[in-house]
Structure formats: structure tokens, C-alpha cells
Length: 64
Image (cartoon, rainbow, N blue to C red; front, side, top):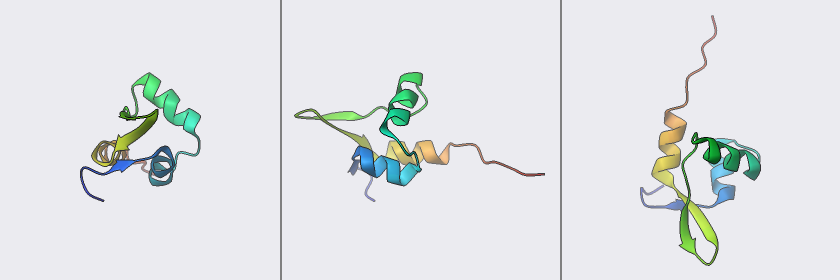
């Protein structure tokens, strides 16, 4: 995906594995997920780079 590409909520859910819109909005309210941008007419999108950075910053689970 290109750096400037924007993602819909469905795209974000597919990319992150988050299964509900409510979970995304709860995380945004807590400050633990990137905020969307308003592209007009009541539509919102997320920047690909910000979502990918969020994914890359997730802690790696280790098993011992």
C-alpha cells in the first residue's frame, strides 16, 4: 500500500484483526489507536502509515 493511502473502517478491521467497530472506537477514546481523518460528507478514513506503525509497535508475545 502507498504511504498516502487511506483505509476505511472495514480495511482497518481486516488489516489489524480487530473484529468490531466498537473496539476500534474504544481504543481511540483511550488513546491507544490512531485517530481517523475526516474526508468530508461524514466519511472518515485512517492513514495507512499510522495503522501500520500501530501494528509494528504492538508488543511481541514470548513463550518460555
